Length: 125
Image 1 (cartoon, rainbow, N blue to C red):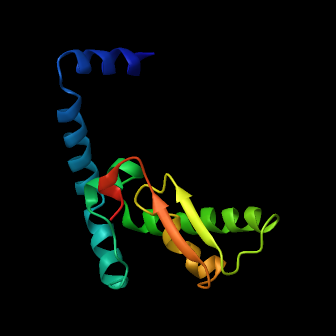
Image 2 (cartoon, rainbow, N blue to C red; image 1 turned 120 degrees about the vertical axis):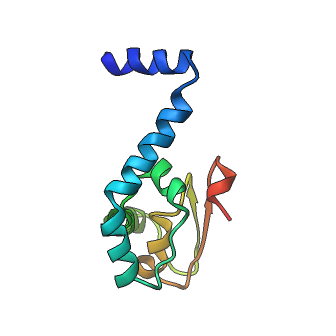
Image 3 (cartoon, rainbow, N blue to C red; image 1 turned 90 degrees about the vertical axis):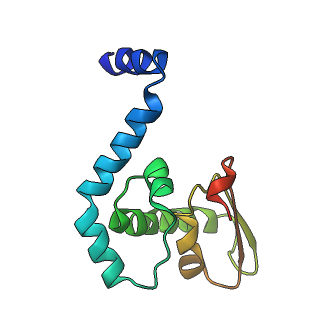
């Protein structure tokens, strides 16, 4: 209940964007060292811009990357009950920054074609 009241107050005075930016920088600072270590240990992993990760997940590169794997495995397991995933076209509807989609070629196989779409065009390039 308190969150709703605070959110309405901030919205009334047009302060939500400022609070969102401050929270982004708080997370960026909090995860600075772990994100730096992740980039050093995984130089070939391409990541979306920090703010996109923050908006869709949380600004922790390790969690962003690795937490997509079990979800992708779960998805492939369930879809495989109904359809063999070979030479298929697979669409991730609402893919966001591709946290799950990026792992599908490894888990479901690279004989498929993979596509992602999202309501927010800045996430899909």
